[in-house]
Length: 319
Image 1 (tube, one colour):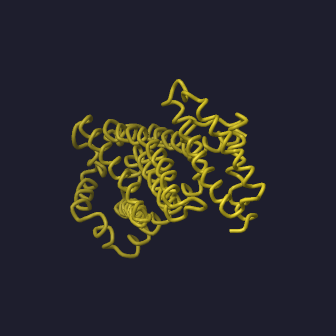
Image 2 (cartoon, one colour; image 1 turned 90 degrees about the vertical axis):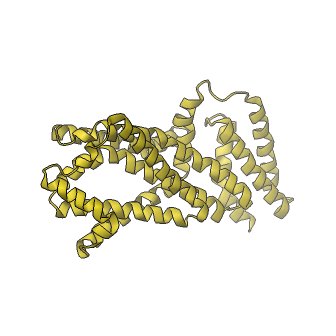
């Protein structure tokens, strides 16, 4: 790689380190350690290919400065939990925002594919969702309660079972990234198609409004969180597939830490979604439509703000 290209590829990262050293930007010791490791990789590369360059001198200076800063910092923040969610994760979300946008585009693309497939191939809904589920839903529609399935089971047992299942599904989407992202891609495809198929099936059966009122009470947070977990999987996969100037192992270590932090940030939202599904969704038909809309838009606004808007605000405030 030519030196000019090397500088261009890493310039933004080096400037961020300068901002950290000048205390214009606040990060955790873990993130600082990651920056130190990345800089060591850059310095090693520069010493190998541009040993007498000013770039090597500059990187050597940055490495020594950040090393000193790491070992001067004895503790992170008094509230590590708060720092994780308000500082650390938003920085990572901004850093990997393009991957997150891609995950959402992928989900909505396959959701449309699912709806179109159900439209042009009537048997597709049964093939995708299963005869048992379709027949049960049709029976519930005839009884005047299309989403009665959400009324089965106790509040607490449903809450716990649903939350555990959703976290497991999300963790699978994340961990399967070790297949070079292939299985994560297929999980994203499956999730998008199933949502699209089910919503179109409900539309055909005349139960679209009921399905929207019920499913999206908890689904706004649940599905959003699954897409974020999928994006975390793609971040992990890309760290192996595209290591940039780092060794593949070093890139994987950094990618694993960053992607896992993003995945961890979804857990409170999965718990909230499970609570809503266990305790509130069962009353979807009894509550006023306005209350349905308030809960759906409210939960969607909260999770959208945290994962999509807040990271941008934090980024520009730190400049």
